Length: 233
Ligand SMILES: [Zn+2]
Image (cartoon, rainbow, N blue to C red):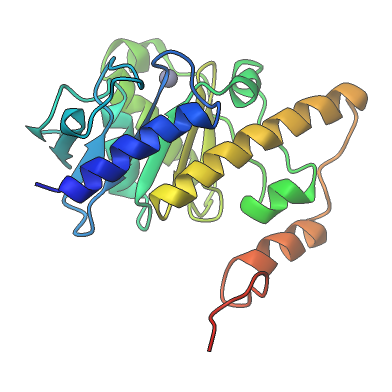
């Protein structure tokens, strides 16, 4: 069942290691099938080196395991994002060094340059601290709820800002495809590295102006995008 999806999710999880985004078993990638009925996710605690297609966990949206090994402990966070963010098809969570450094410093990633603006239409936000109740019970579900809560409250479009820093924890990143979420995760780490260095050189640096942010974001995204080769006639 869903053999193609399991294969893709297995390969993509290994790619996280190749991209330098995970250490040990910190991290997981999931994706949903075309009908949006099932989620395929990395199994819990299985090393990336020995991860096989057959190990990938398949669940329905109510967290029932359909096949494969016991799923990642972060599965409920992933499910909450799929249930609330229409249009996303794949999610990555890592503890990649620079993005996690900002999460631990409790700082959002302000848009300091056009590399950021090419991918995210504004700052990558950071959650508030979780309460003792949120941590003690249903921790992973509440992590997902916390991300959804901020997007809803601040009226942010999750398709325009496809990443989030969970305070004291690390980044969650999503996208419209597995390829896209890998790219988003990689660029988020690069942006965090650039921000760290820019802030080291000049702690008083300001975000780029809105007109420059809009220019770079909308030339690559949306109906008036013109960057790249476009559709060949
Ligand atoms: Zn984590």
